[in-house]
Image 1 (cartoon, rainbow, N blue to C red):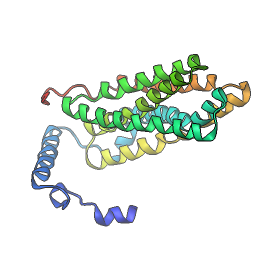
Image 2 (cartoon, rainbow, N blue to C red):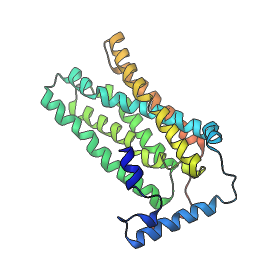
Image 3 (tube, rainbow, N blue to C red):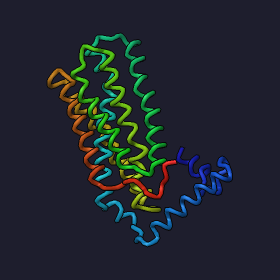
Length: 243
């Protein structure tokens, strides 16, 4: 795929054959506007960007959300089977539901963040909703529909925050610094995909219950939301209209 991207994906909107003329022009105007907004700022080198406190904080935030994301994805079937003694075919149908709502919520958050020009709350609110829903799941044990609803909301929230989150690095970085930092955040942050399932599985082995591991995932989501708020990026852009 990397080889294909190198030869098939264009560097500039004006060279993209799959875009209409008005789409090319709109993208080019947006790029020029962003470039003009940052014209007075000193451009960072890649190494400077890697050391930037906001880049490091965003990396930690993504690590925390990925911890919860993969912990939930890996162990949701096991949790449902343990709590309700479901057959494999029933579990298969139930685990299809969270990605369906996640797709819809991710598209909505991305669209509304662009419409309003606000990014920070569009990233934080879904994470908080996921935290609340996931934290409530142990109390729903014995009520399968309510348990599934909580897991669906939690999964959707973890996925929905990503469109707004991934726009944050480009708010203060450009060019190579932005691209490299996004790669750093993604690469290091995805290590949480190892930690989340490991913690959840380890707690289950030690205690015979998933509840402690679930609360650990909730703590990771709380840390993610707190970090995104503290970074201070993505407040509403007053230049973006409500239309």
